[in-house]
Each structure stands twice: as structure tokens, then as C-alpha cells.
Image (spheres, rainbow, N blue to C red):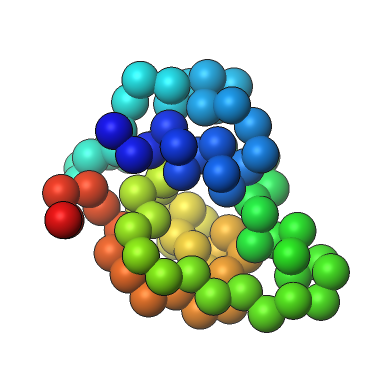
Length: 85
């Protein structure tokens, strides 16, 4: 499952702190990394960096607030869900 490692990388917190230690988000899930968590690209933007993400997101896509563009990425090219390989 890749969701726990992505959550850890993007938030700087262990996955169990966000409830994703044993769970991979699926296509129809109505959840994601809690919006109260600031993500790595947001910290980078605060320091003046441009942020671009490539690859698989799979840490929340149930509405626009959970998408990469709302979580700190200026640009994102990739897919949002699991099952691509």
C-alpha cells in the first residue's frame, strides 16, 4: 500500500498520526489527508519555491480541497487514484 508512505512524506508525520497506517485510499473514498495538515509543497511555497508534482497522488481526491493544486502544488501531472502501475 502506498498511501501510508505518501502521507508520511507529504506531511512529515507518521501515517498512524493521520489514520492511514494500514489503509490505501480507493477510487470512491470520501476522505483524504486531513485538511488541518500542512503539506510539504506548502512549506516550500512559503520559502519562495515553485512547486511541481509528478506521479501518483493517492492521498485524497474526494473534492477540490484535497487535490494537489489545493495542497500546495503550483502544477501537478499525474493520476489521483491507486491501481496504476
